[in-house]
Length: 282
Length: 312
Image 1 (cartoon, chains in turn brown, cyan):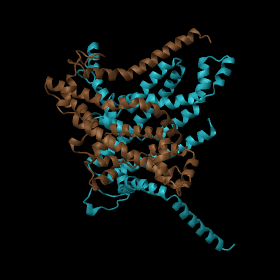
Image 2 (spheres, one colour):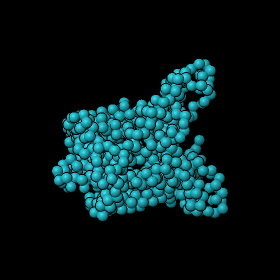
Image 3 (cartoon, helix red, strand yellow):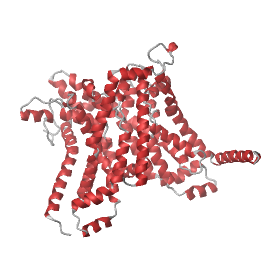
Image 4 (cartoon, chains in turn orange, blue):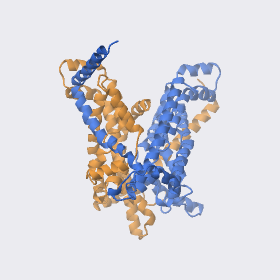
């Protein structure tokens, strides 16, 4: 088909516009990335470091500013993700069974938790009464199951042919065996999706940590990063101090980004499916 | 008719229920563990909604009593609460007004792209910010827009003016909240629109071309008409969630700009967690939950109607 010159013009304009849009996402990140490798951070906008060096990272790591929070972030995210994934599949599996007594009632309860959210105050006092303050379990327990993720997983389980379950039950397999041997291998895509969703959520968590963790040694990268960024305003200090703080700021942004960037190719493979499933239900 | 068969019927039903439970006892075990978690960490806290009707937090624990609607009456007499309510609606409305059409435009433009490598690369890039935390997004834009030692400072130096401290400016804070929200979520929101554009019957386009429709007419009468229902449903659902404005504001704003950026949930956080006025803060949360629930139910109901009846 021949294209008119108007169409060609539009097409060119379209590519330019969308390219520009993509640049507004990329350039800020690239600017900060180059700052972390620059021996003389020139804070005007540029894409390539001024005199490449790894000194900034070495210094920030050695001075111990981000090593501890980094470890905390990794620890919380992995432990939390494993717990949440296990609890979610434990609940999604029975809820997907059409013959489960009271199935509609239990599903209604799950939807109710999405609809009604009376805020963090009662949960905060509950955690305080349970003596879980300053304990990572507080974060993992209050947010342990995301009802949204649960519904995505349940829908996926429902799409597995029932005959598989029935024949396994007739053969005398226990529910645990069926879940581990039959369901989980078939549900690998959804398990991977939910795993990634939980991991990103835990890694990005800020509010619950501020709420339940007052001990600074237990704070994660996100909490540290926000406090350095906000602190800037009332920072007098001399030139050296300011450069040091800027360095910590830039490197922390990049370190906080690394896991998300590493997971992103996998995330991208799955989230389209996830969002479609979620939107059908929601 | 005697009652005898009915009683038998009921007994048989009850027995059948028990049999069904026993038949699925492995499943029931799993269900109970999971639901126990929901009971303790979701439903039990929900029962504390009654705090909103007590003076808890204002008196010694031994003197706590029900005070009726006093907290709610106080709520509306507080200028700070009214301000938070207004800001919540204002910022959410601004986000919808400016932010809602953008993913639709992105989707239409992406759909026109024929070089699939470029299209996929752009998609990959514009979806990505959705997975960054508000803290990281805040950090990026605080660094770029900082009044000193930043591209922002460089820009104003070039203009020969004093740099604007955007994040501490009452004038720009709402605009920044809207812009960063779009920056983070607009790309991701195109997924649904693109998917529904894909599901439009290609024959419609061919028929339109035969009828002599140009590209604009095709876009308007086929593409946009084809996704109209999806657009309306998403808009309605979005309006239902108008009060859910918290994490972004909590992370990105400082007390300097509170007048224009304090929203219901940040206000509840301050009165509840920081000042421990539990009863009062609970009234704020409960008000938000009640209005929020009505909005969600209403919007779900309308969305369902739209889905059933197709288009308006």
